[in-house]
Amino acid sequence: MKQVKYSYCVDTTGHLINIKDMSSATRHDRKLMCLECGEEMVANLGTKKAWYFSHKADKACDGESYLHKLAKRRIREKFMSDGNFPITFVRNVPCQEFKQCPYRDEFECFERDVNIPSDLKIWNGNVLYDTCQEEVRQGEFQPDLLLTCSTKPEREPIFIEVYKTHQSEESKVASNYKIIETTKIKTEADIDDIIDRGFVEGQNCHTYKFFPRLPSIRKKDMPIDRFILWKNGAATVYRSIDYKVYCDKLNQKVERNSVRELNLNTKRCIDIYEDLIAKKQLNSYQIGLIYLVKKGMDIKNCILCKYNKFNSFYEDYICILYKDLLGAQSPKPKQSMANTCPRYELNQELMSYPLLEQEVSEVPM
Image 1: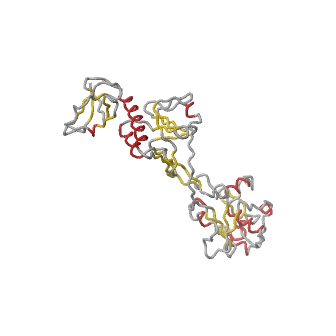
Image 2: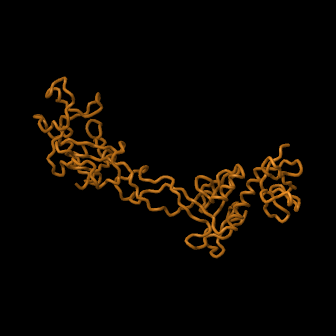
Image 3: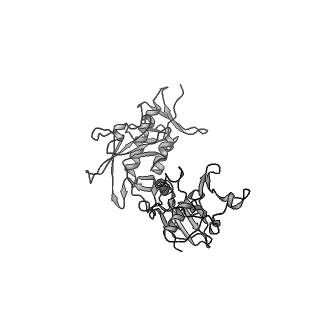
């Protein structure tokens, strides 16, 4: 039978022994026993292979139970022997202006996977937890390890669960207890990682009912829609999907020769105007131009003309009179042609829609 190689065992006093602490001179000084089954073990200190403990007799021991017990034992000893036991929460953190910003985006306005360092023993000079007990019942549950505070017994405890073969039951996760559950322990190296780094959320553990204080973050790279009006009445829109203008420029113009610039919350405008004009929605050009006209600007632009209709062939708005006005072979007219067009007429249907000042903000010029 193939023997399992272990890096740890215990002596007759129950003291945990690492194979690295053995030597040829001390290997027979005391009786060594398996952490799982209690049977006698021997230290294999070869010169060609890594050192390890194995059962003295040819025995089939449960290696999975060994890892579970070893993890509980080593985490507890680490907690009780060191002054600190770090835990790093990894969370998505919103921009500090997320709640009040009208241009917020559920994805872009979050900093992803932000490390939030904390500690299970001491924080800001105060003792949080100083006791770690194994397999102690707490209410209806019996966690692998239970963290409590001896000076403040009323403080809510923390469960530490070692995931080897079974994850925490749903009733425990749904309870009000704070829980730290390791990711699946497959090897001794997985335990080493916890001992060396502490708990790191999403990497060697998962947490439940922890609500760490999030750091203050000001996002500056959320793309926004920017409407730009030129001197000739033509307009340009830099869409958020073009990644040309970001939220750090909300109050700064981006084009030197523009006469007006607007920030557009295009999606919210479109949601409100979704029934406009033959099943088509208001586009960013129309939103910006309507806003400025309603603000009193004298603008002529083909996009505002009543003869500018949606064409399913071009999948775009186009002047339905341009072939009669310019000739059958002429290209589509530019927006600025409205300044000289004899048939230009402001589309009153567009003008009938209310001003969306909450969805549009003017950039200081």
